[in-house]
Length: 71
Image (cartoon, rainbow, N blue to C red; front, side, top):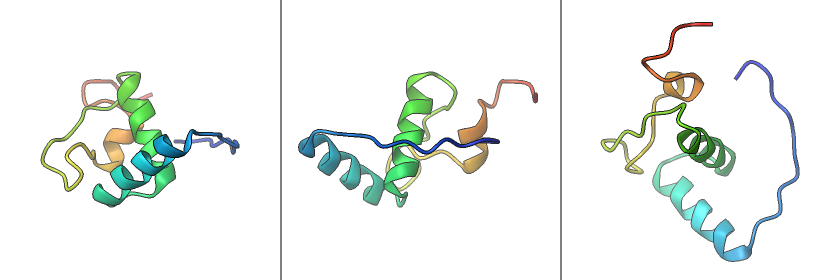
């Protein structure tokens, strides 16, 4: 992430609890969990089933897919 934008996000309480539990399981902050899931959803990150949370990529994978060329 070269540039960041701060936002306020409203979530249903049950979704917030679920995301918080997922983040804790993956040893990530809530923000990192949300960013990770958005990146997976748009196909820019490959999920890693061997990590503590079951799908936590390395920081390099959060930036781009392994099959993409550097910008």
